[in-house]
Image (cartoon, rainbow over all chains, first blue to last red; front, side, top):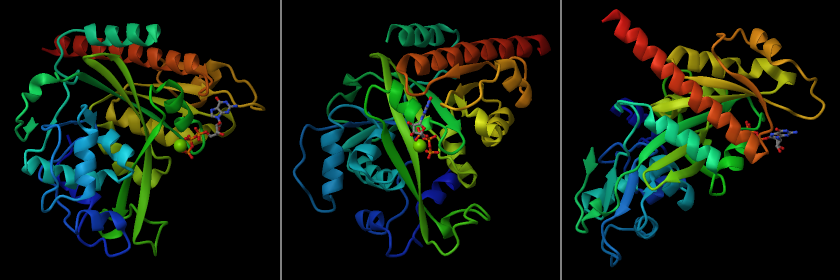
Length: 125
Length: 204
Ligand SMILES: Nc1nc2c(ncn2[C@@H]2O[C@H](COP(=O)(O)OP(=O)(O)OP(=O)(O)O)[C@@H](O)[C@H]2O)c(=O)[nH]1
Ligand SMILES: [Mg+2]
């Protein structure tokens, strides 16, 4: 997962008024966590009544993530830049309204069974 | 790493293993087409908004006078099973967005470098990049109409590739052909992993 310095590059508070996405995050730039594009987001509740500090984009994320989605998918579906989505996710995590988890990766896997599963899976598609 | 706590036993949905594959190559070479051809969803686009002040040194040279710029990435998904998902990312074409690549390349199992024989040099930066990072990659020669057909060993030589790097022809518009490219990449990534493990064991 990327380090803090990379995170700084996506969004910062010098963005100025031209960029609509910053309106969504109200100028705040730093998400609470750093979320990888393939981190997985799941809503923790089936529905949430709008509360202070939550905008329509937050609600949209909760709606979308009733089914587990990657950060990249959330951004694409909401048509918002990834940097903006990271900030919104930070808000939601703070309120325990979503859970963001890292998928398992192949890095530590002891054998090639995952590779074989992918190859067989692709063949079968 | 977990963020936040759930009220629902959110363990409910078990975490899948994610495989990340990049599709790279020069401008207009078929990256979006390939991601779309194999993805189970319509190809999605994700964007990063960059600000001049937020980006290091020379990264935005060429877009002077612009406060912000947007980098688009293609994104696709193939669900192999409930616990195995493949994510495809089509990289932004322009060189000045390397730092986006760095994020994309983190944890990527491998990359497809698409090339067009009419503009072979366009894929040099991608090849340099993945060689430099040690990311396993295959070169897929996208067959555009009107392009002279080269033999694969000619392409291999022209690109000065390591002999182990697979080079294959493809048609990025065809699902079967694009699937074949991904399978070749997975086989190559698996071999590379075994070879590295062997090398590591030998030096122990
Ligand atoms: N003949 C032929 N045309 C192709 C093939 N792959 C892509 N094309 C066409 O080439 C054009 C460019 O393809 P894209 O997929 O948009 O290329 P790209 O690499 O995403 O382009 P940028 O994102 O702009 O760098 C489109 O019109 C495609 O239909 C192929 O295998 N054969
Ligand atoms: Mg494209």
